[in-house]
Length: 248
Image (tube, rainbow, N blue to C red; front, top):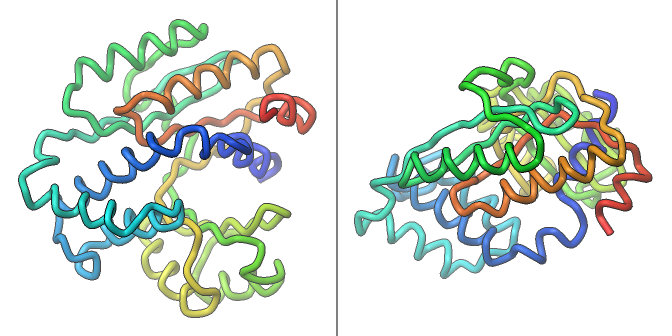
């Protein structure tokens, strides 16, 4: 899909992860705790927990932090967390999907609505923008995993649906229900992935000019900085020059 690599790169702007490392670890810990609470504390018997741990490791989260998050689930923590999806429109009519894990639905809804309002957007009903996205599996490998042709061949053999390779690495897409099986097969041929998760992939991208892009990134930053928000997805497309200025 044209422009998706630009979308991906903006969502992971250079320096962004370093600036919010502590908050990122907190969100990863929450996901591990909830995954362990909902299923088995053994990752071999709990696919969601296995993915959560793998993603935590990919962000260099210490083993002690991971084990501590699992232990919390067995101590009764994580009982009150509720998974909620919020949907709305940001500047330039861009569609935004927000995934949250919260112990206070009213607080989360109020905060998220205020972020949209402050940035000239609007929070909609559930389903108001989700139809513009596909729920798919995403597996990311660093460039060192192999040449694009080799990664493509391995992905096809594993049962993946699409592969996009560029200088930042390889992004492999799977059907929602095939993620675990494909990820396992790819681990055998390419090694451990940098990230394995279920995402909302935009079907089409909405062009956004420089002025609107700045406001849009403000909205996304506010959403990502909220303790209750786990993931933010959008369907914007910004040109390379503007992307570079936003990342600086």
